[in-house]
Amino acid sequence: MNKGIIIIPTYNEAENIVPLIEDIAALPEKFDILIVDDNSPDGTTDKVEDYIKSRKHDVKIDDLKVYVDKREDKKGLGTAYIHGFKKALEIGYEYIFEMDGDFSHNPYDIINLYNACADEGYDLAVGSRYISGVNVVNWPMGRVLLSYFASTYVRLITGMPVKDSTAGFKCYKRRVLETIDLDKIKFIGYAFQIEMKFTAWKYGFRIKEVPIVFTDRKRGESKMSINIIKEAIFGVISMKINSFFKKYKIANQT
Image 1 (cartoon, rainbow, N blue to C red):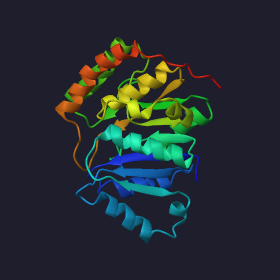
Image 2 (tube, rainbow, N blue to C red):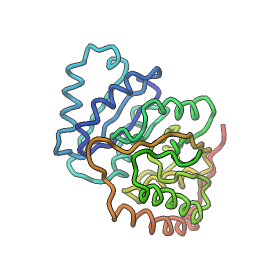
Image 3 (cartoon, rainbow, N blue to C red):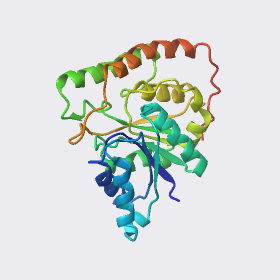
């Protein structure tokens, strides 16, 4: 078992998922992979399983474990990650990653996130589009502005010093996920990313933003919707208010 596992939620990512696995397998550091698929009608999990069988004697694939969990319904991004977190903790991984399945995140940046936690001592490393300017490729300007000002809005409401609050490319130390009550995480869309960072910050965990370049998907369709945007905008206020009535036992720094 490798020290780290990368959780990749998928829904209709048959075009992307096998090339992504190959790129992760080619990294100089080895990380296992957990694919949490919401019963993709395009056969995403079949693609993965067929690939693993066809390459079962490949050295790169032998160096990592690829888990595939197929859920019965499309239940949302947040619940997919919670499912993955629980499985990763149960197996015993020390470093647990979140990553998109559409190549928006460069697999080679996994190493930088890992180093921030394993070598520099941070509890949560965030692949940030906005920590060193605006590093987004192939998004229309309207979406760039929406994302950037959404993160500014989150900082103003919550006080959380994270410039890319909706980022979904992260590395957690296991103690962060052991401390957070995962069953009480409320949001299921992109607000899930905000809630996880906010909760980790409130518990006193050390967070580092690692600069990345985010590239919009070249294949497949975006999962963004107006309901996801509404959840993020209005959910932040309720999240902040609810935090006033909760006690956070501050994490011991090591």
